[in-house]
Image (tube, rainbow, N blue to C red; front, top):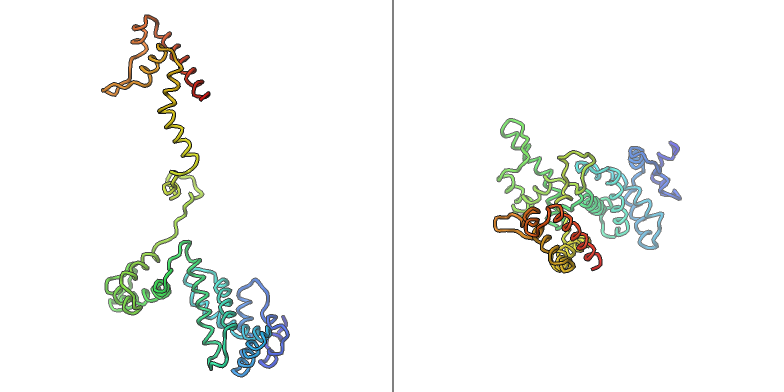
Amino acid sequence: MSEASMNLSPATALTVRDPWALVPSLGNLDAYITAANRVPLLTHEQEVEAATRLRASGDLDAAGKLVLSHLRLVVSISRQYLGYGLPQGDLIQEGNVGLMKAVKRFDPTQGVRLVSYAMHWIKAEIHEYILKNWRMVKVATTKAQRKLFFNLRSMKQSLKDDAAGDSGSDTHRSTLTQAQVDTMATRLNVKREEVLEMETRLSGGDVALEPQTDDSEESYAPIAYLADETNEPTQVLEARNRDWLAGDGIALALNALDPRSRRIVEERWLKVNDDSSGGLTLHDLAAEYGVSAERIRQIEVAAMKKMRKALQVA
């Protein structure tokens, strides 16, 4: 862009075929802000003339001139919201959306300058963007909560500065005193409980559900204890299968055994005495049946194989 084109007079600016050419299409935010501040302002007569043409015939050139002449207003307003940690470029972009909405709805016959009318729309779009992107979880939904969100931070700092000045020393308290809560609730015309609730929301932070990248034992993300697997399909099937095996399944498998094998399995694995001990040992069963303990073990192994086969068939 030439130096001459950056210093156009208001009269020349109105004759530009493509007014958006005045603002460079660059990724550098500083270059955009510099160019936006150099776009000449419209006089009141020029503004009324362009707005009238836009409302009468939908003249896009007239809309472009109105938008371009107020880009610096968006830049100025965006600076007021840099404390929320969001990129200024994104704030400007959302503010420009609000500016275009204002230009579309602006009525020059009301006797109000576009700069006064557009401020509401610009701030509304920036507010909406901040509320949606400042945290993953929305911190303000009602009108009162939105009012609190955008006033609590600045008012809280002002009250703390006053308290520090009165005491003659600096203060770094992160919590509000009862008097400060009452003062803020009165000024904003909300309940003190709402002030406390918003202060709690603002003081909190987002917590990642997924584990962090490190593999340390101390890394324990909420996903580990918030997940509800009660109705997870595989968990449901496994639970149903366990219940069947513990009831009808074990009965079906035992019915496939001869009496001696069945009694050995029941004594070794299924019987629990009052003292929480198991049933008979290999040696007890060997003495009862007049065989060796090794023979009882072999019968037990064969019985287990038969039971597994019966369950597989079932």
